[in-house]
Image (cartoon, rainbow, N blue to C red; front, side, top):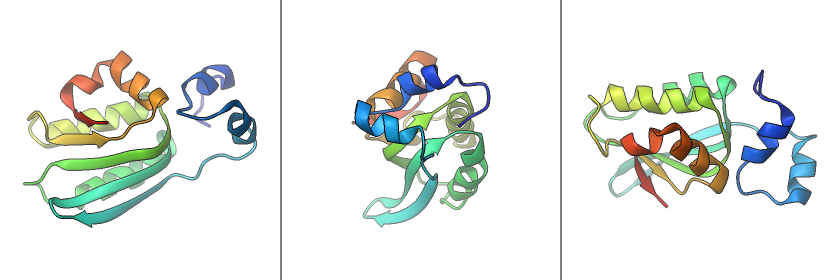
Length: 130
């Protein structure tokens, strides 16, 4: 997992998992994935796994492939963890769209991920679609 995040704290903010799957989670690190999916309104980046230091480069590379005149839409349904590095990336995406509101959309964040977005205040610069 991310350096410097104690397992106990990580456990507390690992999103939407039962105790049983958390026990398995200790042994199996979720693989970060990002894939573009075309929808009527344009491309959606479907993100899965832990959005941490290891995820930043591939996720930013994917964001940069999106047309600059369209919102950055991120489907977070399968995001299991979001740390400060991931939050910083969302702020960076917001600034890349000239800090216009509603230009970065986060869809269906799980409870722990939503908690990270809300406690950091990053939720206020995004459009959250639950």
